[in-house]
Amino acid sequence: MNPRASAAANGSDDVIAAHGLRFAYPGDGFRLRVETLRIPVGAHAACIGPSGCGKTTLINLLTGIVAPDAGRIELCGQAITDLSEDARRALRIRRVGLVFQEFELLDYLTAYENILLPYYVAADMPADGAARERARSIATAMGVASTLRRRPGRLSQGERQRIAVCRALVTQPDLIVCDEPTGNLDPASTARTLDLLFEQAAAHDATLLVVTHNHALLDRFDRVIDMSAPEGAS
Image (cartoon, rainbow, N blue to C red; front, side, top):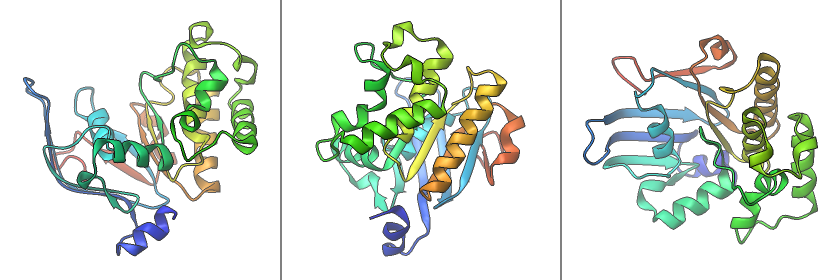
């Protein structure tokens, strides 16, 4: 079931719907409060705000990486705040493509194997010929096809970032979430990366949520979530 069908079954056209979120790190003064946040299926949303305002924490909550202290989050039509950690992880692997700020590539795998990692960790998603061809095609589009046999330690920072983007796209996810996906890229690579993200989102009717500090990119998005605004994320 795609997120549009799943959302419709729940009377909603949102791929993300969050209400009454409260979160705090133990022993830390940081507090995150989000009263309401809705992102419709197919939206292209940017999340902005100063360092330390909670942008990364917010996307970790919305994708079920961490659980809120209070509140409800629906992701692709499922209430992930009602799911176990294992169930949230399984949903995330199947439905969400994530680009982490630190890339999270595995050092003992080649770049090609890192792109295919979601298929290795999901029992019901075999790395078949179509998946492997898609991995090579996306790597070519991102300009990193020549690096596929290298391990992360032999890649530049920008190459690692682009491999992480390839991994997020290879499963053709319903939701693409990127934490600073162009932060280490030159202008040409930034443009190419954004073009590919938007192309993949359009091709598969996916929703795109991007955390960025680069306000020059905001014209490309139809929704901006400003974490520094008095009302916070909404």
